[in-house]
Length: 550
Ligand SMILES: NC(=O)c1ncn([C@@H]2O[C@H](COP(=O)(O)O)[C@@H](O)[C@H]2O)c1NC=O
Image 1 (cartoon, rainbow, N blue to C red):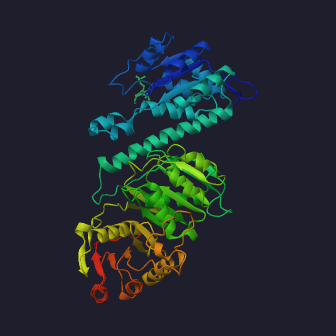
Image 2: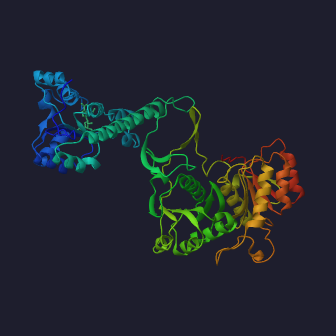
Image 3: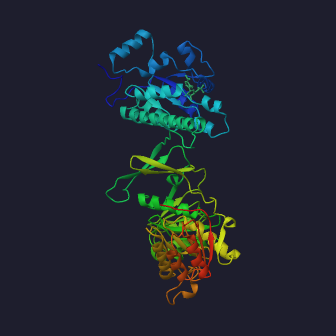
């Protein structure tokens, strides 16, 4: 072990010879022109070499280097000692340098490669054979070889790095730190690729009798370090799913301080609530639970109604909408201290209103599409995976509900019950949600027994609904504004995320004056529960579906 590769004090290795083999040819023309102008000799595979020739840059075909034709439909191109010894020789070792000379092999200083589009092929209508054909073999071998040998070789796997690469070449070569960084990116590139291949094999290709594959891999790219985690003594960072849709982790921040860990948690819960509905909907969230959820004729009305549920808790809350924020809504939000607003977009002028508020974070995040069908929760020593609790689960359509007590609901009442049932799933279990006119008016959540959630929902409905903004509509309780404490439970409907195990919780709601209740049913004591509703002359529907949310 004697020498460093030819380099400068900063460990730069001059780039004299590069191997180029890319599937994604984006940016390739500028790169190879730049390399050529910097005096770099190019060796390249079939399609890449053709493009390089077309742009007038001299290139040696890899088959001229190996003396062996690319064959088997491209399955074998660069898999040859003349290529791999040129990449893998550790030029800090005299023995390696001498062996290369004896074998008449020239070393590579730079490898530029990206891989066959396996994931894109799997996501298309391709046959299994077509998917298998897109498993790149030679590419990952070159990439991993170059990354392993980063003390001597630089590896570039992303067109986003081409400009940096040309700068490094012009500066006399990549520094060791740059080569290390590029090698780390390269191993992440091949690791994510292999995880995608392994997931496909274990999943749709091999399959599993019980529907759950023997292997599930996930890869994550660093988004950013966060100031801290749930508490200031906990370090935290955001990582983004390399294979799934961008989601909240990929949201565009338009204004305000950096998002915190808790901001992300609450914003995620807020979007879950808002996107439960097809009609314009807004949700105000604190500590991952709703202070208010509502639908409206427009998004400003939905927000007014959601806010009116619990204006006390809405202070410092996170607001999500499923429609672009209008100027009218932005003016309402500006009147209340709010941590985060997240929306699919902002109408002209709305963003400016929010940007005038120093402390609000404003995010643009498209509606969720193509989400992974399963969700993951970490436990000690493992993960739990479950299919998402979809909005359109069996039992969510009121036409499938069973009328268990009282008179059939009018269309208006049924609409309120359907709203309450949908909204209820966004509150942590045990959840009881009292609603009126498409808005929650009292929510009991996160209690260890259902009767306490009922008490909480009633108490909060009847003590918290006051108007704070000039034109906020105290949903269901407008007649009480400025007068005695409103009793918003009177004439409202209620939803329970799971069955009532005893009539006691229901009785709290009945005593508070709710006129209709929707719940899954299925308790051993359903008869007693239904009887209590019957005795109170209250309509009760059973959905047959539960929506726990822990
Ligand atoms: N088999 C091999 O020896 C081989 N060597 C390089 N490749 C891949 O071939 C692609 C480039 O091919 P072309 O330059 O012919 O368009 C790159 O994505 C590279 O990763 C190979 N193909 C697949 O395994």
